[in-house]
Structures are given as C-alpha cells and as structure tokens.
Length: 239
Image (cartoon, rainbow, N blue to C red; front, side, top):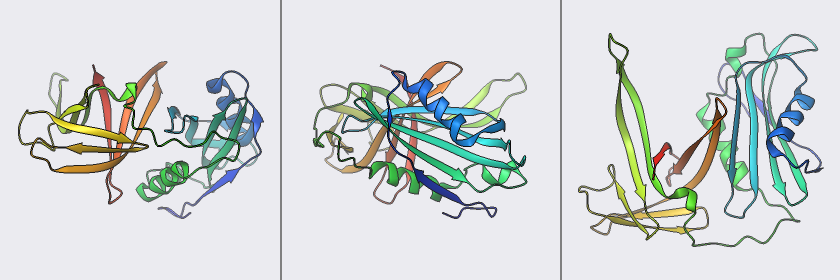
C-alpha cells in the first residue's frame, strides 16, 4: 500500500500462538521479536473488543531504528485473542533514511487498515451474533474537540466539534446533530449505531470503542464512521 513521501506499507499475517495470559505483555514481546529495534520513538498501545467478542490489542511505533542497517521504519503489531490462541498480524513500512516518511499520518492508509480489521474472520471463532444490546462502555458523554489557541498565561482554548451523550434507556443527546436539547434516540445492531433526532431524522455510523494507554492510564475513545468513510474520534468525558 502506497502512502505519502514515497513510503509504502504491507500487512503480514503470521501463524497463531498460544495466549500467554497477559495480552499487553505479549503484544510488546511480539513487537520486539518481529522488528528487532535498535532504538525506538513513542510507543502507542490500544485495545478494544469487536461486536463478536474478540479482544484486540495493538502495539505501534513510528520511529523504529533497525539494528541491521540503522534505517528508520514504522511497525505495528495486532494481536487478536480467541480463547487460548492469539492471531498475530503486523503492519510494516519500508525502510527509509528519515523517520518522518513513515509516521503513518496517511488518512487513506488508516481507512484501509480499519476496513481490514473490521473484515477479519476466523474459522475457530465463535459465530457472529448481530447483537442489539447496548455496550456498557458506550454509555456516558463523548466529545471531539480541537485546540483553538493558547493564552499568554498558558490556558488553552478549545472548540467542540461533536458531542454525544448515550444513556442505558436508549435515549441520547447530540450537540452537532440536534437543534435543541431534547432527547433523541439511538440503537445498536452489530457494529452499527443509528442516532435519531427528536424530529425523526437519523444517521447510521459504524462505531468502534477503543482504549489508548497514555502514561499508564487507559483513555477511552469512540470512533464514528459515516457512510462516506469520514471518521470522527471522540474522547470519553464521564458518566
């Protein structure tokens, strides 16, 4: 897969392995084994659970220095836990002279990766159930915002781009979809969420709940992808 700055990427699927008992430790060990880094940049670890109940975890780094020839490249490992086994999948860039060529800022590549992960099927996995139950992790307030400025005293100004509140009774609020503070409704079907305004207008998204490890703390994120493939990332704000 080609991306910007003459960088390209490949997905590699390895044989299954026994589950070690600790998915976070195992994905780190597999990452070091596959990429054999001399030095590394900032590590990112993310985890989530699919609607089928598979546990996923990724370990990635955009600034790996190869022990073999000191070139720079990007490497990501995805582990999918199914009972006593884990499936091992890697995403790796070509080796280049400059790390900035492989920082995975390519939107198109991320879309391809997300579609690939969403399409994964395993013969040994339990049968997919098109559940309509509301995941407990979805409940609460979510916001997508950007920084608009920093004052002389260091205070940060932000702008909220999207905000949703989901409740266990199937009602919700949305600052960007609804014209009023009245409650709308939402429903779940597999990995799809349909959000309806008080007036009856609705939109369906593919959704994904993900946790990202930052300074030994798991931050929760909700990803909503519309029918055109546009993805919105929202951070959990509380119950």
